[in-house]
Amino acid sequence: MAAEILIDAHTHTQPTPEAGRAFVRQWSAGGDREGTVDELLRSMDAAGITRTLIVPWLPAQDMVAEQVSTGADRDAAVAAVTDEWRELNRWAAEAVTKNPDRLACLVGVDPVLMPVELIEAEVAERLATGACGLKIAPMFIRARPDDEVMEVVWRCARDHAVFVLSESGALSLDGGTGWGHPAHFDAVLRSYPTVTVQLAHLGQGAERDVAVLTGRYPNVVTDTSLRLDLEPPAHTADLIRRIGPDRVLFGTNYPLVDQGAYAAALRALPLTDDELELVGRANAARLLGD
Image (cartoon, rainbow, N blue to C red; front, side, top):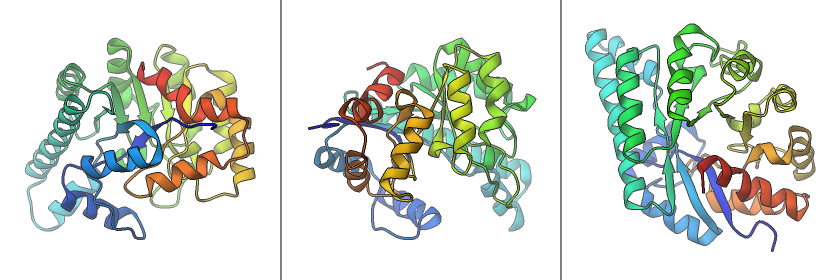
């Protein structure tokens, strides 16, 4: 069967059922998923997913602002949120150590809140203990990927020879042009040709710009997270072909969506067996070094 074995290249698996349910409540319309590793492994087995990438991420600046609004000292709030994020990174790397054949993970950072020296140390430590790449979310960092403050991310990725997964899309939280608009990655891709950048969500709302980038640079890919249940299958298949089946990775954004349902949706796309193999497994295997 086509795409019998899949790799999920984008999830937000959580350390505890409480954290998973809170994550789903904050970012999704519903669902009773716990988002834990145990639940994920059961889901993977049922869906024919051999490997899953955990993406440790927090809306850190929003969390700091919320604490400050209730009277907390800003420096103390930044320190507390940074510590929480580093603990999430540590947990993700530990989960990979416990499940090396099934899981992979990234290192999440925010170059606005975190000093350069801290990012350098955090990246080095987590990559040495199980992580395989970096994660940024320009929409929540409030900085474009080509902003000078982001340079530490690209430099660390280059120096450690790892990839970067970034949130991407046309819109920002306030309805303006997205900080993570695919067009803002042009200079990064040109300046760091050895760093592969994985643009999340097929560049939501800016898919044509993603196709421009894949036609221009060999070091950019994208993923299907949060997108396989939004468009008719024929439209999604056409979009994948315009971007390039060799540049699209299967991703879900579990636990915000049902991983098994997304696996079924991918397999139902009107793509050839070779195209499904690329999107469902081969592209991610190449990126993760499998």
